[in-house]
Image (cartoon, rainbow, N blue to C red):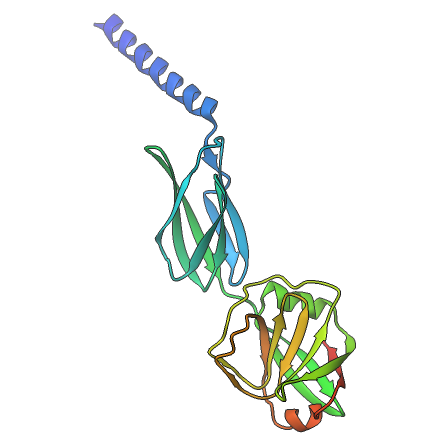
Length: 222
């Protein structure tokens, strides 16, 4: 009886070892089983160990994240708003799950001064807004456009989610085309253009008159 028990234990041990070795040999696994992403930012989820086309699907939390295929084995996960989600990667009959946590963006403020008038802008904490703040202090010449905005082109790009807005409000601070800073001083409805939003002025009282109708020097500082 003792020999039989030992024989069974040995057999089970061999089977477990064989399965472990087989799994180790394939090396197929996600680059991360847990991801934490800040609103407006993105990270890559990849199934390593294969060149075959992998099926990716958001199984929960679709309102918190979006996914976009980057290759046969990877997708870009973009955080939309605070919450949690799950993404399943399927290869044949095997599936792998990644748990995604979306953190809220940390807000901060900057000062804007034009023609002796000072304003405060509350930034939304996105990577693009952080980049703008890292460039301060600066004084730039902003050109006039359409009777509702001032703009300035930089020699650098701001990364972030570009989208259209049903309403652009006076005081909104945006990036157009990845490298153009735009300060709106009047409201726009249903603009067809896509922008990366950086934040908004806490008050627009006197903004329109301070900016005037022509190009103007605008000072930005922390």
